[in-house]
Length: 114
Image (cartoon, rainbow, N blue to C red; front, side, top):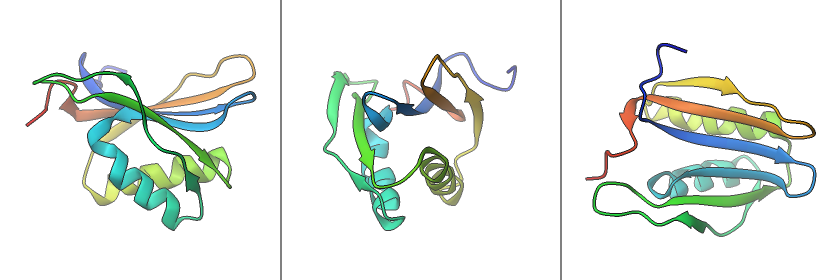
């Protein structure tokens, strides 16, 4: 994956048998992703901060997603990024019993807070 910068921004999508569907991302993507997922028929939970941000980095959050499947969730998030002209590289990181796809944002770094 040489086209992925070392400190690229990312959005992670999960389908865990115990926790269900969820999205993990920088907090600044939450509103747009939630809006697009709801428009596609999903229900989204409230964001939970996993890592507090600072003056250079947005907080890292996660939120649950229900009323749909992993493939449709992934397509909806991908379409949202494409509509916003955000270039990304998809990386599949499956683990036993869990689906995990990371969307590496190739032109956006983790320390891009403005």
